[in-house]
Structures are given as structure tokens and as C-alpha cells.
Image (cartoon, rainbow, N blue to C red; front, side):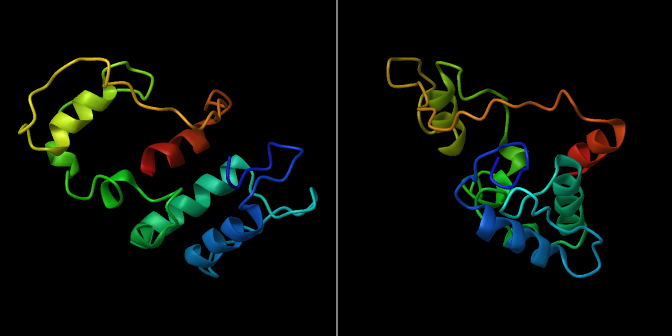
Length: 141
């Protein structure tokens, strides 16, 4: 949602984030931002192609925090090899599960009223419109 063209209202960050992504991908990419909405944006297929190029070049650690892979950001001290569970932010026990894993099991896994994550983003568009090529990009990233 920070770079997509699927909106009629400019989302804060388009003018900064779209050029940053394209610059990080480098001049070899044949993708240009759309500007017909009055601000730079990327269609989903272009966004996925740019991310794929960035990852292929090993530059994912330079991505802005909205695009940075979780294992390079908030989970840098809990690498994927330590991950033992998958959950969603809406799971009422998500925070306690996360706390338990990040602490290396030092905190007893509990379920109480203090386990629910606070959801502050509400972008609901899913990947239901992905073509096979887009699905391949999503899996590669």
C-alpha cells in the first residue's frame, strides 16, 4: 500500500518510497513508476519485480523499514532457524507466542489478557488477483 497505484488518494510516502525502491533496484531494471495519478506509484507486478531484483542483487538489507525482510529488522536476533510457529497479528495469543520465541524460551509461554497484538495498519487487499508470474515473484521474495 505504500507504493501501489491501487488508490485514488496519495498515500504518504509514495513520493519518497517509489524512487528509493527503483534506485535500489538499479538502472538495469526496465521498470518505471506510473505518474498518471499525480504521484509516483507501482503496479503490483512491477513492485514484485523490483523487490525480486533487489533480493537477487543481495541488497534487501538496504530496503526501507516498510519493505525490509523481518529477519533483517525486528527479528534480527531471532533468525528464521529459531522460528517454531506461524501466527497472525489477529491471534489473541500472538504477543505471548512472540515473546516466548524471541526470549529463547526464557519467558514461560502463557496466555493472558496481555497477549493480544495491537493492530494499527488496516490494509486489506490480498493477493487474490495474482497471476502465475506474480505468484512466482511473491514466492521468490
